[in-house]
Image 1 (cartoon, rainbow, N blue to C red):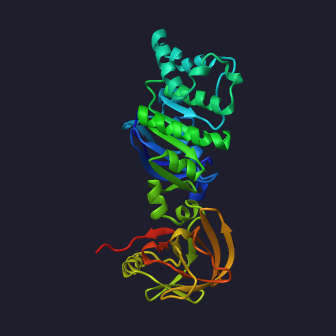
Image 2: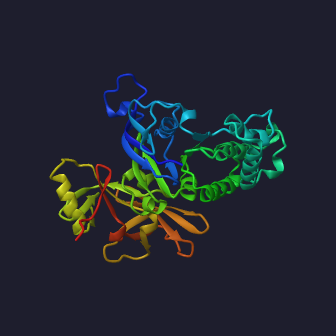
Image 3: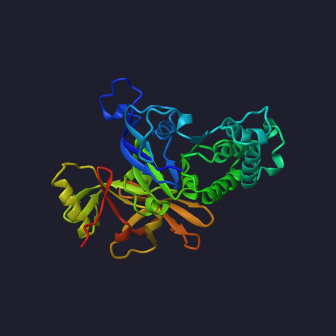
Length: 370
């Protein structure tokens, strides 16, 4: 197991990058602590696989340093880093049995026969492969092959970390939850540093203790699934996490109100104070407010500080309903419980102050502490 430390790390596929957009990975400093279960989450093209390949040694970074337990490993090949990597498509030796596939890395390391048998049996039991040990790998299903691929990383005692690159993409949907649960159990049993790359927020939140969410080559937030949902540090986090994502509206500030389309939303004085401080240092008109659909209160009648909306659509998802509403020129989403009767033409919405977020240049403005 190892702590993985990225120091001033950046990477470009161009020989002479000149601007931030030229970098697949923009300069970052980040730590994966020893024994943690982490997810690297983000959309296609955000730099997830590039970052994973840099950590494993398949790719040398343009700038910065990768350290394992404070040791610089930039010059080390993948086999010298003791990293196990599980790819999107299972990598197995079809001509070998399951036993021989699992034993292969141990035989390369010259383990004694009795120890190989003990380790292979242990991992086979954990992965529920015991009945398949003597079957040829070419006769396995896709999920069984992926478990064998995972097992080859787990069977080694010397592995520093296991990196998973979209490992469940080719697995049937009804089997994914079983493998996610199995990975979680494996982490709890062996306490190995694991980094799991995915574009699926459900996979990330069910596997990882902490999620690093990437956007345009940067980690824009690193935290628990609950933190990413309740306190999105960047508008992209609000947009990407949740189903549907956060309502985000461009606004201007007038006195202590966020204003759009002649609609005035009161803001907490602590937020206004922090925004004023920031705007005294940088000049920007990129100001937004955000609120998650779960926190938008939907009423049938007008109330204090409520705003009239037109109801454009109601989507009944069984345990809850998603409303699409027209507020001024903006379309917003609201989520209501299954037992709440959805309005048909007109509704009134409330934005609870504690749930309303303010963003400057797409980063969260936190309220002044008193």
